[in-house]
Image (tube, rainbow, N blue to C red; front, side, top):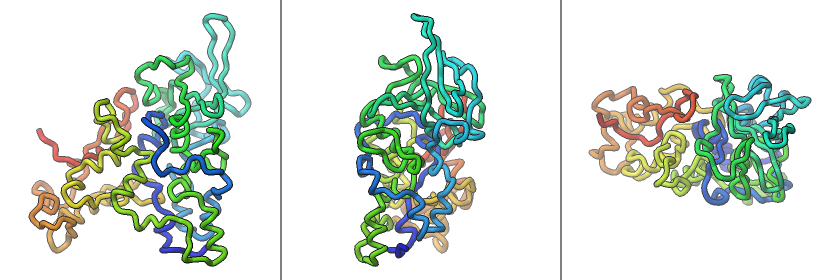
Length: 376
């Protein structure tokens, strides 16, 4: 149907970066307005959904299908959540109870002033479940409730939702109210597109799909069907610089401009990977070659094989006959062979793992993306 333009990898890249932080669990903590460059208000009719891309980009679509990015938004029903769904019952420390209302999940509490029960139906679960799930409900076209407690399936535990560690004046008994662009950004980082007049995506756009990174696909598909191959109507991501690639991933995983350096967020270089990577000496002192794609496959889950990442390090930090140093100075620190271990151990030494949510009981860790030398 569609012709491949500039290769498959050029036309279907960038569902990328460690699936932790923003996609592993919601916690709407972005500052400012909508992410730069993200299409959030375009009419849904311009978006086609993943199935339309799969017809010509079969291998990339197959790799993405069922990935953490693909599954980072679910309807808050037992049928959709399956084994990820929490048991009904009291949510510890929350002041509310999780109940089944048919197949739909709801939270209930007794109003201490009136003695009457209050019920809030849950509509979406944000997060892939690799680490956690945060539940939300839409209160109006631009307002949503984010539950105070999130569920961590691997641990079978409820704990505080990231970003709600400190009580806010506007918090309500069930959680935190998110409004306007902040709410839209939260939802858009877990979906492919969000309607103009609502925060509720269509089910076919649940999860970070192809068009979340590439833009709406209708014009591209129509051009390819008409064999207008010189007018692809789709950005060629292969032409982006490393800085532009990092900015693209940072739309949801956070760029430098998204992090308040005077807040506690400035130290979360394990959770906000693009922000951390662009500050790393490996990048800033060597012509800035590193991007998220230097280590991560764009269409599938993050690899758990450390050798994959070590090879990316050794592309520069290895013996002259095997390395491909990006620095113009062969004597620069960025081109030297590691004096401690020339072939292995790069990640454990220079990207030391850190607790993902140290304020909670959850022990999950992520690699620190501020690549550095440990000073003891």
